[in-house]
Image 1 (spheres, rainbow, N blue to C red):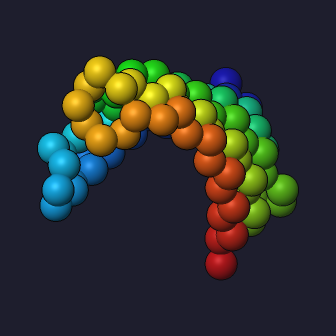
Image 2: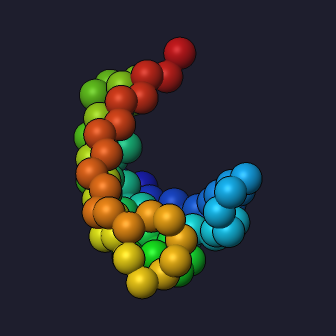
Length: 88
């Protein structure tokens, strides 16, 4: 169905003072206007994101990732992120 698309991603996070990490993300898109995604970051756990696009040029998104104090990664707090993307 052309209204729906699935976008898998693998992201490598390299740090100077912490252990490097790999993150997997899968996002589901509807008519390139709305997206819902889920992620897993190595040693940290699950995250979620939701986003909306207007006329395929601007995207506003919100993501959430649960912190994991026992992972020893230096990322102990839950994060909330707001993203704004503009395509030229």
